[in-house]
Length: 455
Ligand code: FES
Ligand code: FE
Image 1 (spheres, rainbow, N blue to C red):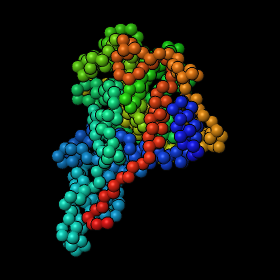
Image 2 (image 1 turned 90 degrees about the horizontal axis):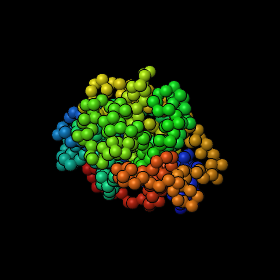
Image 3 (image 1 turned 135 degrees about the horizontal axis):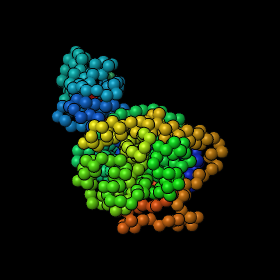
Image 4 (image 1 turned 90 degrees about the vertical axis):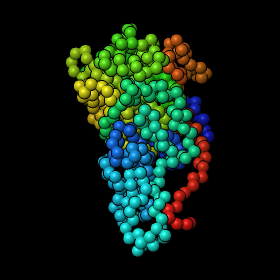
């Protein structure tokens, strides 16, 4: 991997060693130092609304059962049998009061406690030999949620989720809390792409620059109401806490007119007004910015868009949540959820889902355009020449490090963090600087747990 400190220093200056997008050693370091510590999204509470509901999700190689136990509490449990290590739950989702291991039949309640152990007396000497009490599937070391989004960290000493997300929660509400009852999610659709996981996260965080080029055909067929030239100058970005994203400048008008322009019906607008803070409303109503795509470090992204789905002027907003789940240094599993306000009219939900599928489902037009670039980039990054190249990720910065355009003042942008008008790779630099911070830190000793015996 060469000189690591030189690699991190270059990254912080916006000069990206090209091989980090396809390098086994870099991926090993990411596993050891980043994915073992960071908060990572696993599920939304609306995926498990009822007692006994569960989904199985992964944090890289680790499988977790995310279940709502019989008391209604959400549990995230390592999906590995305490006996000989079989995967206890093999289904992806369902409803169960218990999970029985397929290997020798140990069974667990949906809160993880062992309840049944075949031939307990004969094989182990009963409770005296092996007390089931107190034994349970290993819980995820840290679990917390925000607006129903459940996150885990494999680091028991991780800072709180609140601290981790920081001021980005201000922006998360636009996607996940458009009314007091929050959102429901559908999905995920899942597919694999032969691309490095970082590319998607960077793209969604702030790459407005690629839209007119990569998505030319989508713009040409009129899926977007904005003409190409207008879109081009309206690319804006913000970064706050542990995430950042892009915004579109909306036409002049009141808050209500601007939200109607994006395609929201009046009853949803009323609820947004009751739910969002004065500042959250001001970003849209006073400043005229609508939140679009975003990424939370390291691998969770959102997209909020409002395409035309039929001929005519009507647009339909949709929101998607997506995770770039690393499989290897050159393969990523994409998990893509559709998000919609729980209280939205049924007709809106149906149409919004259609807009999502058309743009960002597995066969969505944007999705297909994007992925071709990312696969090609990943392939090229594996070669020997890529080891000699530093990619330029300095858009928005002059040679001396000063900014091309100043950050917006509080009267121009009411949200927390730093926002800019125009193109800039500020957020890509933020993401990779965080990446460098994690990768530089030596791993800590993690205590192991032994089951029903001494070591
Ligand atoms: Fe699960 Fe034996 S491995 S019961
Ligand atoms: Fe794109």
